[in-house]
Image (cartoon, rainbow, N blue to C red):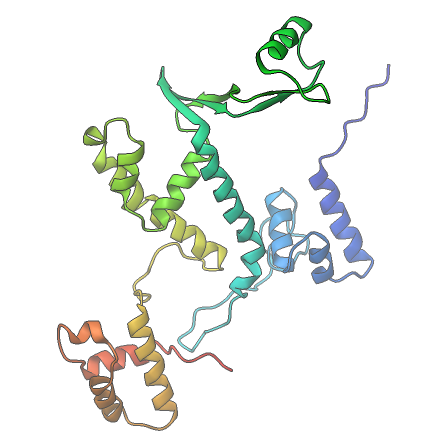
Length: 307
């Protein structure tokens, strides 16, 4: 008896189709569009992640890793480049807004229990229920008609109906709770209010562990920022010595300094303006703006966008 041929994984077809289209002269950008990507590099990465010998930078055959030298060298010159518009991701985020709304609504009927090391979930819904003839046995139908009557189409409406649906059990609460909790904390909302609302005994909550997992070195907020940095194209997942965070106030002052320097204004005159005008208000609450501040901000090379 001949054994049935095993169907190849869909990813295999993706790789074969990629090479076939390339051979037929279709550009990598056009191929990427066929797969729903805006950039060929995203497709290269997907194929590489799926286990195929593709260079992540140019898409050519590369069994041992990237073979081309398309690397962004670090130089002392201005390396500013515009990133893809964040508006390109709006279509991805709007469905999440709707998902959050539905998920929050679903919590109304949710009941959770802690049992044998698991969070056990049940959904107990209380709402009017309509029964059609034939959906229940004859005896139940007879009793329902007696208690609730029926309409012209032979349906029954039970005004105070209810049903319970199993939701499973795990060492962590089932979705959507973990995601909603993470969104709450990533939105800089108070941890205390969350614990007070959801913990069975807030006074004995493991506060130190919670703070560590939220604000700690490898906590939720830091990891979310690391993922965001990688998604936006950075190769680093930490601040580094020369990338101190710049708040909006200092950013505004830095752009002003660049603009005035391009106009040929001397730093001493720019410093007088910074001191006199409403720049660096938070800093001025503590001390006067110095030439050292101006030089540091100027060296950031943060300029106005091109119109």
